[in-house]
Length: 198
Image 1 (cartoon, helix red, strand yellow):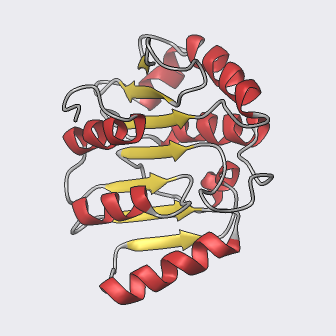
Image 2: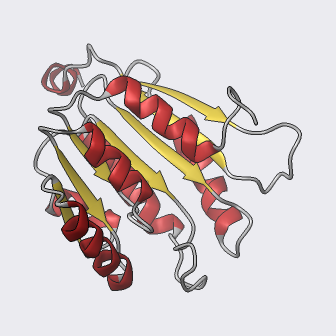
């Protein structure tokens, strides 16, 4: 068992855990099987989790979990994450993306580069200073490599005065293995001041 070099999804959760407080707002931009949503819900006892998925099957499945566990702090949104600004009016401290397709679902229904990049761009706008965005990127499926490449190009252009960006890849595994991107927003960043200076 490895205790330090963990799966990308576990590393993402460990990073988020260090950042959020129980009263914060968080977003699971890709509900899927609900692992990240449940993880966030358990941390945010007095906070709130927005969970997006375009697939009704994922939403309905997690509704059962909400009922069974009497979860009160999750808002399910049956829409694409590219529409995040239509729903999230508060500044999240953490936004988690787990790209690709729904495990056990239709592998033809995948996250797409255009919608993912829009969601990521808009997420950066609303992310609370000191907050993080995590992206677990899968490149092994059809369309995954293109999505990963475009995301990699996008994050390289982010202003280092505002965002610190880290990419974690396994060096001794298949190059198609999932990898993690972490974006932290400078906690002293003042959007109003920045806009004035610009």
